[in-house]
Length: 411
Image 1 (tube, rainbow, N blue to C red):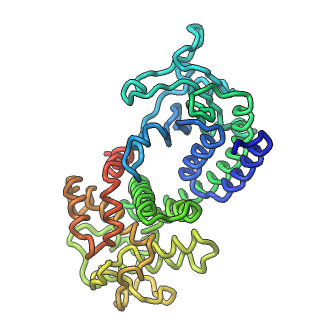
Image 2 (image 1 turned 180 degrees about the horizontal axis):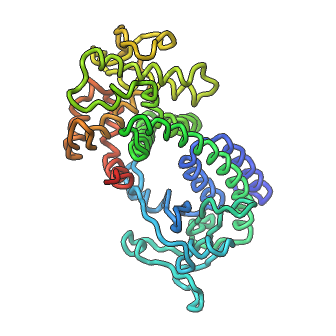
Image 3 (image 1 turned 120 degrees about the horizontal axis):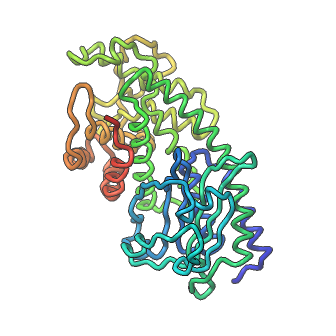
């Protein structure tokens, strides 16, 4: 049934309400792009953020390209940036602060300062035609990002230009998106400050490490959710919390003595190792008592991401009462958790964290080759790791590899 203009506007208002519930900036940006495209029936689109003097792509979506993939797959993970200037369409919108509606990307007048880069079309054999680009700019002038929707479609699936109604809907939607982004950035800044504190204490807990683990975890969950037919509403809630909570997996190390935390050689004595393992309890205690679903997930990940799927004795901390743990004392060994008694979020982060640790250099070891790290994870399926989580991990192998490159450690 074709919706009236008023019904479409009401639909936009309903979508806007859900944006305010999203706490992670990246998850919110992806959702903004998805919903904006749905509102105006755009086949494709991208969303960019400001990165210094550049615009950096965060997400790109393309239904035509997606249909050519196997069910459950995503289009390739993209990561590139370009200068903020008038030479590109998005750059022009960023500089001018004004939206730009282009009926045909291949028919831009010669006197326009911006040009359409046809490289991507040639590579993917896609035909970009109509483009509407909108600046996500706060009332005080801060540019949060650039929203771009591509190839509007009519009811017959034909590509048309973005008409006045489409422009109205996107502009209305964008104002709510901006408010939601401002709130999400406040959360992001608080998370960054907490993680910076952990990085001061433990050199291994770098920005790149926690970002990789967080992004790995999100990719694994998305595929796991697809494999298990998880309803969209449940998936949206879980992935939003997971993206943030995964970053806090080792935050409890702030309570571990430097003598142990920064020890290089020789490696830990049994007692030192047991004290180090107490970081799981310290991390959990930071989020207790929990006041939200996010707090619960942060607590579960911090506490249980070192458990083993098979209940092996090297898993920890098990059924320990973390509230009674004494900082600086050895962790009292109790019965390890096993199988689905380990929260899903912790089972996912366990794979993401171990893979990242294997594939990157540490003070006590060299980095493994990435293929060897993938093999180790796969061979540990059913033992250290949940087989269903490992399956999802291997199914998104290409995206995991792309994230590795996007968040490479600095020399």
